[in-house]
Length: 450
Image 1: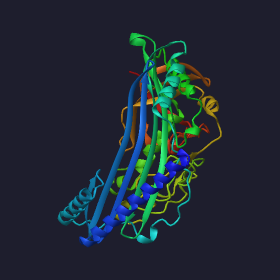
Image 2 (image 1 turned 120 degrees about the vertical axis):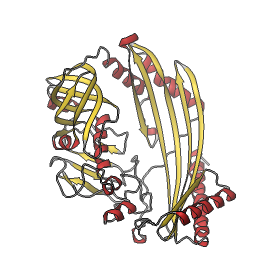
Image 3 (image 1 turned 135 degrees about the vertical axis):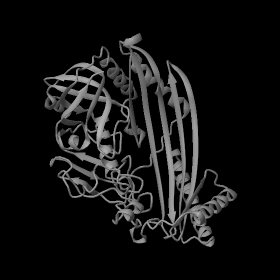
Image 4 (image 1 turned 90 degrees about the vertical axis):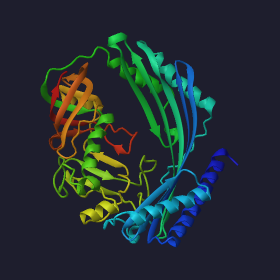
């Protein structure tokens, strides 16, 4: 039997074991008087190796387990968890959850998701690709990445390279009779390098994250890309305060989309802590922009047949022609708002940001003269008002060509205005996230120097 087949069989057997334990716990909860109950169990296994300056720094094997129980006595809720799956620990966890529920206040919105919304379709999403890499091979890959970066003229030091291989198994079960199994792998290569000396020193990094190790490009390219990025940052200048167009590189553009997702999430809405209150059905982005949630994307970073409550996921538009079509709701937040779950307990399941056909070079040409942002610092986002102010660094661009690096600047605007003033979205999608977004060009923002 091959290692891959053996690994596959072992993972399925472990999922079955977790499911059996979860279903037994649900029976115990019912016997203890709970009207409803749910169980979430997971096992994460991984290898993490780091190297620096040609030497092995750390070798870490991980095996983390989690077992959480939530019970409902009417509308009173109690939760408890453990990392120990032996019978005594699980029994105590059930007792604790029940004891907590008996002393909590009733909440009319609490309870399981509606039974009729439980998932019944479980397509193969191609998420399980264990990486048969041992410590010696992982060290060799890390050294290859770092050596390739350090070999580039001008690189003066390294903060190290890392190689990570991970496998995750999870079971969610509830007293509706639903039991869902999930398994997925995630692997990462990364490196951080330095260039310059003393006060002129700069650092930067690069990484790749995939479901299947065969989707990695040449490992050395990670090192060369990091070297290219850090060398391009040498000799930075500041900018005087001005208003100008701002182009977000793909790796930071998805942050803008993340702020939008936070604003249309149920928790922010029912707490009235969102600048997009009552925005459903209204224009929030330009008409050329669509945001499509696709939970069934093969090898997607957030692909799933069901959400954290067992609700069936589905492919649907979040924003269509710039108009917000719906919110992102769990069962609890939906009840608080008088709406229905959208299958987003736990977050969004892969978001495709569609807007244009220009590659990165084309987006620079569309920018013309303005600021290209490649890094953001600090929080600086008020979710209630939409006020946005972030520390940034990147490059000043003139006539579509990068002129020089800039740092110690701040970019500011209100997010409502930022979204309304998006003039282009690139086809240069960064595939390393569940938010699949290209570069974003904003017509005008305030840029302030140090």
